[in-house]
Amino acid sequence: SRAIVKIQSGCSQYCSYCIVPSKRGVVYSRPVEEIISEIDGLLQAGYREIVLTGTQIGLYKDFNGRTLISLLARMDDKFFNRLDRVRLSSISPSFVNEKLVDWMKHSPIACPHLHLSLQSGSNRILQLMNRYYTREEYLEFCQLCQREIPDFCVTTDVIVGFPGETESDFHDTMSLVQEACFSKVHVFPFSVRPGTLAEQLPDKVPSAEIKKRSSQLLELSKRISYTIKRSYIGKELEVMIESSCGGFTRNYLKVLLRSYHMHPTGRLVR
Image (cartoon, rainbow, N blue to C red; front, side, top):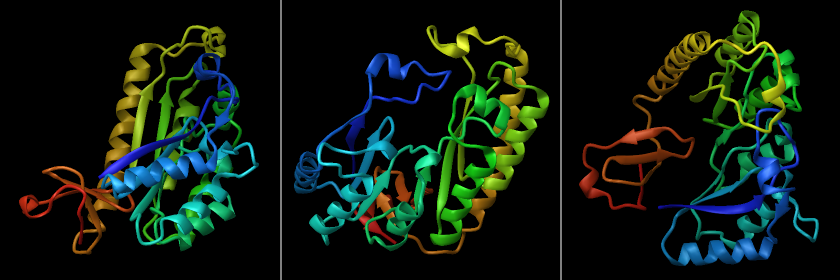
């Protein structure tokens, strides 16, 4: 039902906690037509949803200078009436702009969902992490999407217990999670990756404190997710059947079906 297509590899950002740039090299983007050819084969094989993935898909640009928006527009034209959904995997908040929002708002194949990695709600910690946005900018990105795109949902990643994270920094993260209304938060307790800048940072947070903060953040995110999901009770949504249990809506809410035996995998049902 859902196929993953890698459009870009490598990374040039060097976040202080991450070893990927040292292992995978600089950003490399596959040519648009090569990607289109792969998707065409997947559609012929029966797939209905395509997920575009890569380490930094916001930086996608092929040898001819075609950007992510160019690729998405090409997919709109090429696969009109053949492809049901296009979903973007994790993208840096820095690359959410009006052009991307406009595509998500008007394209018939765009899914109203983005995974925007947050990592921390504290500006001080974001700077130590070498992330290229502030908490204020991150909230602007979220609110722009939520304001312009009907039923838009955002999911995210958060690292808890980064070196130097104080109780005040953690409270900044909790307050941002509350304000952004994430439909799901992936919580990662900080762990050192040898060879990264974070390995050399002082003021490591004790593991017991990291565990406590992680539990608090998970509990908050579950409450917010529950509230969002309850708001959909009684509404009719399109679901892509992915297994005998059910599937996902366009905005990436999981739906369980009682009569799953009536709907084969890959079917779109309401």
